[in-house]
Length: 259
Length: 259
Image (spheres, rainbow over the protein chains, first blue to last red):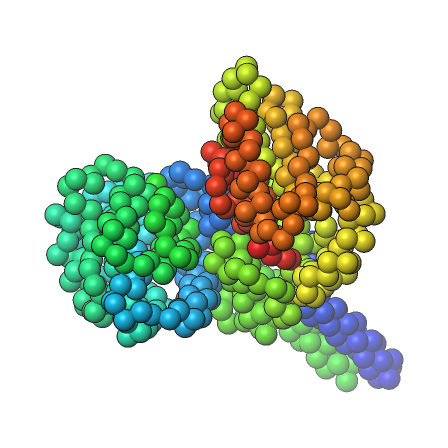
């Protein structure tokens, strides 16, 4: 009896280990279509959506698809957003290291501000990561607090550019009159010191698209004699239009679209 | 002895079920940083790489990072590539449906050929999905066979464009002299019938970049009076330069880069 029991137990254990082992092996496969759960299907959809947004295939979108709330939250908080920004920053630094600067002080670089230098992620957390529509009053109140944290890899890029001798221009669609001081304070408190100019949207550009406003600012810089080597932003409207610079770099932002 | 044995077996079974159940529950979480295995770390890296490539942040790359071989294989074969193409095609069709065509027959659309209309995935499978460097002779031999299958969502777009009344121009960097007939045969065999012109690279464009060659072709079409409403390609070199058209759409291709 004892022997029979022991043998049965041994058989059962072998079966269980086989079951667990096969599960573990399945887990190592890069893809297993049989495993698609509703969650996986939504994640796959949201990955397609995010790719389409980041490649500028989807334009003029007002809100994140509500079924992607958890996906975008996971993207922003789970590490992949940081990894994506880090990866692009490494590419930028590699490009920067190959540039020979002239000694006329006219080698320029353009950085956007919101979600390029400093992050609005905490604000957008309260807006369901962009599932809620844009709220101008809410965003103004947030920006006035001046509490946007630096985005670490971009801050590192900023320091590198300034130390290398680039004239760094921070160009933002934020309204100069109402948000100028708060933006300066926010940037300084986060260590953004040593830039050449912070250029905000003045009254004459009110109502103009970011593409028009930013193209015009870049045109003025080029007319002043600056050579724009790089132009970094989280919105395609930072990187389209005229006088784009020698290279543009798109940082990820799946939370909102600025036309 | 029998009872003690049965009880021990029962305890073991409870433990095994708990282990399996906790594994299943963990699988439902959208993100779980504690679960990061070397495989996950590589996948995360390759996802960043793919995003950077598709957004044109990484340029002039010659091969897929070899650690991403399994990731890219999974992307191409596991369904996400198809979903991404499908998603973008839906966006394009939505844009198309809002266009009012004139009755002068000058409403035009541009499609690239390789990995836009027809797929080279089977060829690139043999080149480790782009982990091996570009092999001009190998690709020529493959293209001469004329066996590239249509990419189904893009074929659907093509049919829609032709039926709607657009003049569809297929513009490809393939060499006219050596690959012209094979390309025509391949496209026809896959149902691409009814396009206005197939434009291949003639001797005069030999050695020119795709941006220069394709810009010049588009310029000629615009000079003929055509209005380019849309321009679809898997390479940024299809979508940069001049006379780009009213909208451009980037299809995914993480396997190779055409300058």
